[in-house]
Structures are given as structure tokens and as C-alpha cells.
Length: 162
Picture 1 (cartoon, rainbow, N blue to C red):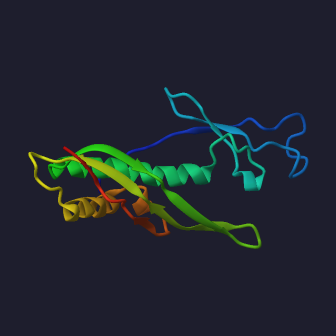
Picture 2: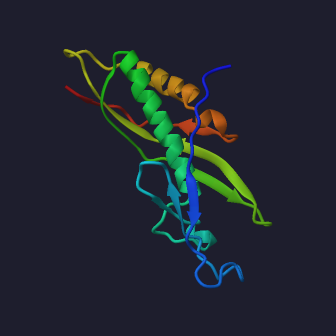
Picture 3: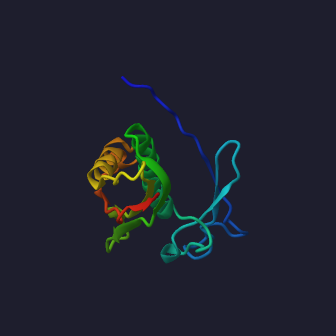
């Protein structure tokens, strides 16, 4: 058995108002996500489900977590491979299907990382090496390994700075 890590959060519903859940439309979906030693993160439902669009939804946070996890593994593995990454951004897109009865699930998440690397003394950056690093990052990402839908990586062309 490997090393176990535990992650804890406290979720506090703040949307009861004066009437609570007397009806589906009576209450706010607002809540706060608390992690020890960090500022609270304002949460809500997706606006399609009567949530506040100025707050983070669980669906957005899941998509962001997949992107963060891939990025952190990519940076780690790039450093090990001797690739000097100087910039990384991702425009990740998650697709969720909601069925007629209201239940649903994610059908896919697609990462679109844009990586900037520094070339070493005029050497070309090997795109195959970066593709391999992306592949290994996906194999190592704890979050990706924990979901039951496809997570694809479609990297943008690499930007090389000298």
C-alpha cells in the first residue's frame, strides 16, 4: 500500500435566509468552502440550477482541478526531462450532460495547454519530448486517475523563447 494523504474541507451553507428550504425557489444555493489557514472560497450551484454566477460551482472546480493537476505534473516532469518551462496557461473545457430526470454526469474534459519553453543555446525544442511529458502528466495526475470520463489533452503549438 502506498502513502495515504488526507484532504479536508468544511462546506457551510449560507443561503437559508429566513425560510430555508420551504420550496425549491425559496433558498439560495450560496455556500462557503473552507480550508484550514486559507481564505474561504464562495460557492454556489451553476446558474442553470439557480446558483449565483459570481460564485464558484462544483462543476467549475472539478474542471479547474483537472487542469491544475495536469499542469503541476507537467511542470514536475518537464523539469526532470531538462525542459525549461517559462510559461503555462490552459483553457480547459468540461462537458456535462444532464438527463431528463435531472441526474447527469461529465462526458469529457479537454485541456488546451499553451506552454512556453526556453531553448538551450540555439537548440530546437523537441515537440515529441513535450508531447511525451504531457502524456506522462496525464498518467500521473491523481484527479484524472480518479474520474470515470475521458480527459483529453490538446496542446497548442509550443512557444519558444530564446
